[in-house]
Length: 454
Image: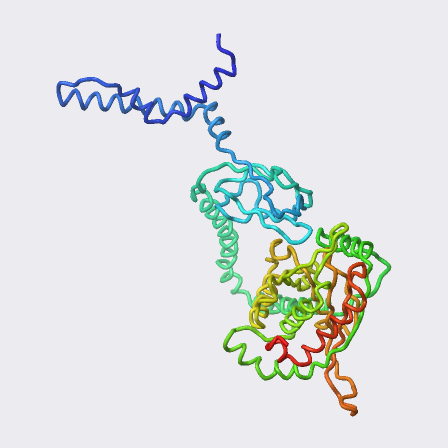
């Protein structure tokens, strides 16, 4: 006596047999003596094979089994070693939609960036396991696909035709009164009243224009409050900034830089750089290279704390703070010490484009030994940046302002910038922090030293 599970296994196994096997069983192997017998036998056996195949495929039990074994569950993808979960920001597809391979299905918001989930296979979505704003863990079931090719395109056109017919119906109804207009034209009164009836319609665009202009007026203040949930990136930024203040013994020291020579160099060569390298020459590349020079001279600023140990890096991976609508991100320019001005500018431009398009990847922001933040682009005159953990220091750039300074005993107007270094006083002494800013100031005020490495 066979158990139900054994019977089920045998049935599924029979279902998986190739259709050619069914056909060959129906046709069999016989020896035919005449051509007429061969034609008659071929016709009968082919019909029998087709009947058997149709019976097997059309069985409700078999159809359900075929669908079951064709389903494919897509899981939350691995995003980064430091990320174990995220929030389901949005579904770009719904149940019943067909998706192709690599087509975007959902967006998961993580602590650092938004990660798009693309379909690994082609098929129709039959089930969504999570709702928007749900927390989803890496490796968890996300949605189910019924594998297969795109559905036949016959159904959609039929619906379009139906809609077209529905649209044609009002047109026919509108056409009916037009046929009766000649009868009304016999009476003079309706002719005179027709233009007057349309006059109020002319005033409608004016009213619409007035309504469109209304939002441009400033909204009045009220006593109402709005509650807006912070996105995961903002929550992480808040947590890490507070953690930085609690963990580090933060201290900030300042200096000022005469930007005359650097601005002159930029003004002289920016057009040539743009023409030859197709990239804009800014100040950030000079500050990155100057930081690499100063970090080489003062290696403690390029170190970090790990328990009871201080780790020194012989390379410089500069995290550049980039503002996005969702918050601040810090993509990393790796091995900046071995890059040229042009290479740095190209890397910054590429990250800027990614930030605008929301395409910065988690890998772009991992690591980093030193951070540069440019608040000057927003008009900041002076500030104290917060250290980007686990790094030990961060450089703050500020706006360039013309100020009266003493040069060789004379008062002159020079373009000046305040620079700030916030550092972890546990492993960086005040002497080292001040020396770092002095080295930075020296090479920025004479950029030729960066080219000669002196």
